[in-house]
Amino acid sequence: MTAPRTVLLAISALRRGGAERQFVELVRGLDRDRWRPRVALCDPTDEYGVDLGAGPYIDLRSASGSTPLTGLRIAAALRRERPAVLHTFGGLLNLYGRLAVRATGIGRMVSAVRAGVPTPRDLRFERFTRGLTDALLVNSVGTRDVLASRARLDAAAIDVVPNGVDEARFHPLGDAERDATRRRLGLGGTALVVLARMSPEKNHVAVLRALGRLRRDGRLGDLHVHFVGRPASRADDETIRAAVTAEGLEATVRFAGPTDVPEDWLAAADGVVQASLFEGMSSVVLESMACGTPVLVSPPADRDGNVRDGVDGVRFSGTDPDEVAAGLARFLALPSEARRRLGESASRRARAEFSLAAMVSRTCAVWERVLRA
Image (cartoon, rainbow, N blue to C red; front, side, top):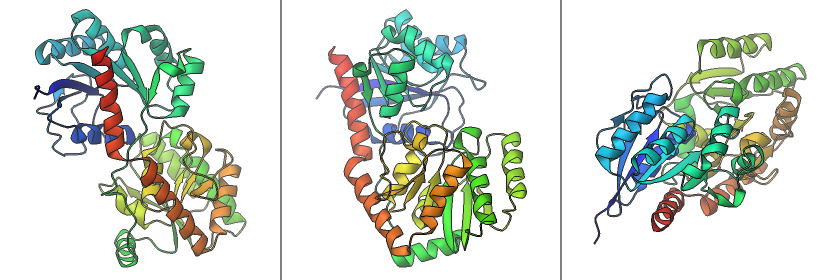
């Protein structure tokens, strides 16, 4: 057998989020007979606390954001680790990784873009440094199309590797276990969960305004909405809580904070709401589907159309409060049996089309391809 090849994987931090969770699962899922992973972080914060089997983290010491020094530290890591592949995960890390590989001549360069709508700055960098990378990965057809149209990249030369779902962790619960989980989490009545970082792009305020419209129309019934996640900033927290007060939703909305068990919230809910203004491929959407829970989703939160309206969940017609309110009202009007059928269909679709093994295998296939080239 040949010795495993080293792959250096660089990401900003291991904070809780969809992209970070996929990163963790990728590293954990690698075949150690073929790959020796090493992990580099700009911010050494690790909110997962699991052993990735990749040795001590390489500290790029850029907690305030990637800087030119980040590129020098990546170059030093390349000289020390001698990886076959450097795989960077978005933003300025892509730029500095590409420059470091070009400067050192060490390794093949693979980059990922995971933002649903990359910033104008990142789009410029992707356009003008595309020739410095051997492969560009995205997790969504929507993101690929944004790069093709706005950064003028060749769509055919962009690899789409969809997110994977841990089926052992995210799965439907039996009736007794689901009832017990609901009691433990304090879910009563019709329970909707919004599991996301509380920041503007997640569109929490529009959801609250939509709920306010339903309250004024007398259509909330026994609905309770649980926001699970931490605020991105104090200002975001204040804005969202002010919207709760302004809409008179104190009895309807609960802030549960961050969680270490997203699978419990997703599997125990009656529905999961994702009204984001943009996403790449939302892990929460796929994980909710795998749990057999209908997803109520905006078009930008599900750019690949994984949730089929009326089949796996409910698709809002847009992202503004009126459009979200109309979708919420359609879901609340469904009888329990219809909601159950949506969840069963969602679970079958997630398990048939998305898995962690497939995500890891497709990523490794890209590394193999660039090494052969």
